[in-house]
Image (tube, rainbow, N blue to C red; front, top):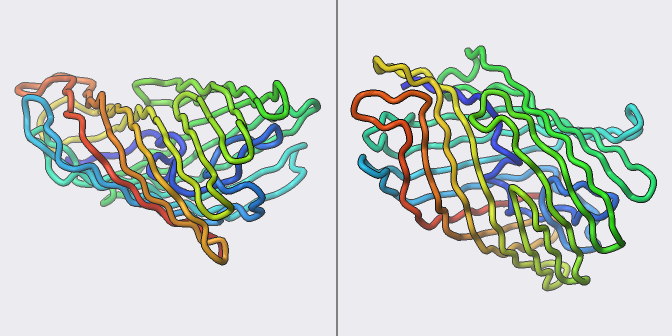
Length: 301
């Protein structure tokens, strides 16, 4: 099977929840990784690895998944068209260990630029627009693909008071089964050691033990559509994967701003859906729930 990605995974799912970025306040849009209060350095790079054990595709076979992700923040420019511009390079690879008797691909990858511009307004309101142009091909054809797409998001954060902000926006995702992903919720600094981000599609509660250690609970919703070309004689050219992930984890910042994190949790309400039904393969297939683990490291040069 020849497969190509047609969209970016929201917020680089494999890395999200791992490394500790800047705690968002009224002056900061909460895109990225957490970091402890008082930390000044935002990670320049982040690398993560995740594993979902073998799961049953209802009515068919089984397959496990290995997930790898990395990003590199290579540019930051102030006072550009009235805002601040940041640039990141992102790479994500998803590997299916078996075909599950439905002709799954062995591996596919995303290579994209994640560019954003952030504007700060009176009363603490922040507006951020991001574009994610990239090539979403099968790994084998990474440099021979005509799939160049650009999901775009726009998010606003407005403070209701010094410790509580609201967030609202959306991501427009051409070629997804779900073409618009809503982004909304509240950001609450409960006190100096606790923070709650009750948001869609990603929520997290963080407890800062000290300047080095913190623990967290998270809930993510993922919905990602892929375009692919099958070697088989069928009409399937689109596949959507959806799941929810509930997890807990811990992270530590060491000397030289090097950060490590690990987490485990439950992946549930899983499904895979094709745009066409073919003989002997249903259009939508449920997948068993199961545990998963992820590990990550981030730092600066």
